[in-house]
Image (tube, rainbow, N blue to C red; front, side):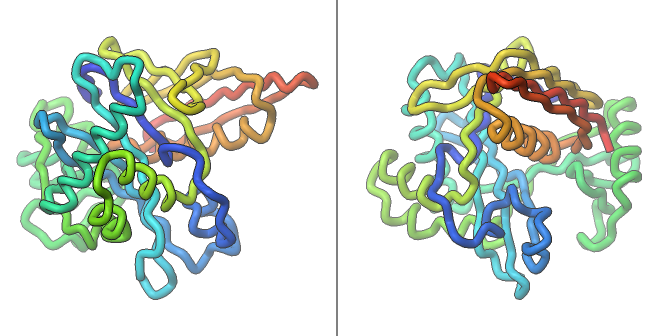
Length: 288
């Protein structure tokens, strides 16, 4: 399990984004039939803030039929040493400015977990020979077999690899990065480019406890229930009064969050709502 220092916050699309005509540019619609000509390829990208703390974001890259990136929504995971405190707005702005600095100085990187004993590197979705070209890869089952073996032998080690701006599709934010004069302006421009309209946060304490809350302005209202996360198995049981549509959106967001973890999981779920709009969602996720 990854070590967490302070509080880790996952901000999905930061805040609600305007509704756009092309629904295929919203990564949550990746499985819709009318979006078959688009390719959806999320990637986890890392950078360091002014204190040297590693920050992470998932870039939800969307490519058109010609292979050109046309959209990239951002899910920031904000790592706060000592806790974020009550001023979430200020914390997000600070990390966004560090994101700008990483962009201007080409300091984004990806992480692979490498096992010299087996001469492979794995990123959770594939494994490849350390000395080979990227197209030399194992299948997904081999990937997790290697990770499990290397984990038992204690030989896995993270390898940081610089990723070009164009490969990450973050160049779609070039104008926002270069024309913003301060944190507030950058945040406004980044939010304006998001297509997904959800606004959830996953919080992780130093003790490993998880929770989900819903962002309303600078307040995040915690949902009743629990989220339990481990390397091999995770479970969720949450309750709220936001109705069935919200429940469906929460289900999609949770599935997406778990699928983008280093060790990807597949999930099964059940949902229900009573006549008052009180809803529950139960989910079980395990390694593929």
